[in-house]
Amino acid sequence: MLEVGVGSDEDLLATLRELLPADDRWRHRHGSPGHGRSHVLPAFVPPYATVPVLGGRLALGTWQSICLVDLNVDNQERQVRLSFLPG
Image (cartoon, one colour):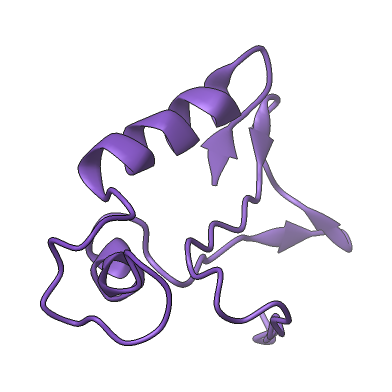
């Protein structure tokens, strides 16, 4: 979960572009240039989130949002899986 808006989301994407550029430095090279960064991204941005649900509503902080970050331009469709654990 991130606090986004007022430039924070653009800052996140700019930082990821700096840390994980889409160029030919990656050893994992199939697909588009920079595809290898998609395999390194989960070390910085986990591919999961645990969010409490209270009274049927997401219990997020005032400015928090759930953000999906995907640097892999080779796959245009994604599926998101939601799992709910009884509390």
